[in-house]
Image (cartoon, rainbow, N blue to C red; front, side):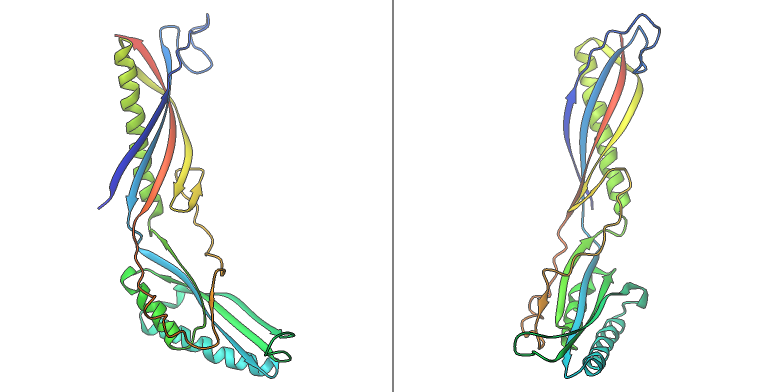
Length: 250
């Protein structure tokens, strides 16, 4: 169930019209301009999780390191598919091979392969993390929790913002002995959704989360299974609109 909340602020602007029948803002000589800004919020539980998982391997030469890595990432992908995650939701993020010139592995070669995984069933998100670590994933980042329909949640917030603007405008009009005759202008001032920002009514899909901070280890982390419980919580969409109303005497 979505929870809706509103934050309202208004700036009345009483404008005396010019000698012309209609001003540049759209009001006639019989009307008074009222400009109202209002914010609306809508809360919803994320229903998707995106995380990155990968394998980093080493070898005496590039060929050996790459072969070990190919075997490791194949196990990761197989574990995800066995969990019911389709291939379309498993995307290669990065592949690399490098010579190591420092530390205990100096002179060896390191290979890495990381995939971005989209889990569309939140109930399986923790299972997916556990599954890949159990088969050898030693690079982990995320999750990024999101809604499958971000536009729908944002639109709910916009609806609340407009209702708030209308309610405040009616209060101003009543206090001034006037009433709203028409809506002149609606400006979408954008807003945010969780940690994402957008400028219009339709939020832009964000890029995958960065690899850093990542969990890296040469062996499977024994505590990862205990840390794989994922709590979706709630994500808030907060937006702002500006609405110009034309007021006339009652």
